[in-house]
Image (cartoon, rainbow, N blue to C red):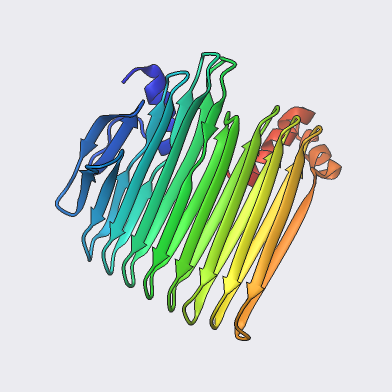
Length: 306
């Protein structure tokens, strides 16, 4: 790996070197490094690009890394990854994609991920996106995530767009069975003329299923962000959707949270708030010796938890 590879890996997967345990590192459509263990097996697909990740029942306190790197201009990458998590597991999955583009041609990665979560299993899934490079070519990321949760399972999904992504359309679909818990936290930063759209469809099918979808966004320059969600309660269930946005310069944030109670026992709530950084927050930090720009950046980083 060269310096650019190492920088991308650090940004999207918090890796400073090839990890131990199970991992699959993909670069420019090819496998850069891969390793399986007896507990977490990674198997390449035979009929299309991608891998199957099989986690045995009862696996606890283990993690698997599957980052993607793209460093070629004019390259379009499409990958299908399927995760099969057994019963009674407690695992962490670290994904993410970093694109470095110094050319005038667009680079794009589309990842389609499907998760099949076993009974009473707990999964933490972290997905980070990052773009770098001084070329005029765009850095495009369009992930699709599908999650199917069996009884008693829990999914904690952290989705972060750090910076540098020219355009992204992110789609997430989740179906919850009885006594399932879903927690989604999304943090997105856009600048210049970048565009980001996220769409969530969550179906609370099971009795006592619960979900919380929280999106924090900061839009700067002339960038545009759209947040669209649809939480459907089809049983005795609880759902909460929250979208908070900060605007700077001439940017826009559009929020369309939708809740649909198809059962009289469903309890669904949505909240949305969009606005500029409060002037008194900036002034307070400036009294500590920070410049106005430094104060704004500190507020943004705290808001996005970067």
